[in-house]
Image 1 (tube, rainbow, N blue to C red):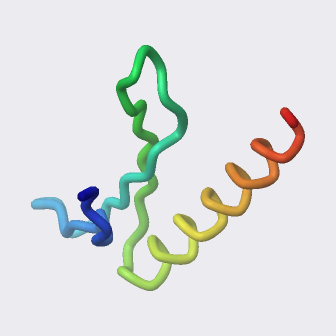
Image 2: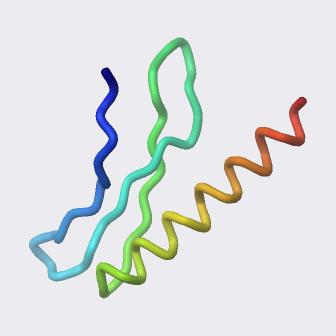
Length: 61
């Protein structure tokens, strides 16, 4: 079963980092990263990235 948690972490420099899957190449996930000063801002950026990925996927079909 795949993992379904959030990939949001606080870095040593105080910023928050979020990771999301951009695409799959040769069966492996390629990740994209977003950074922000607050957890809330990272979560918003990840939601925007997810929406963009969904729209890009619809354009291919």
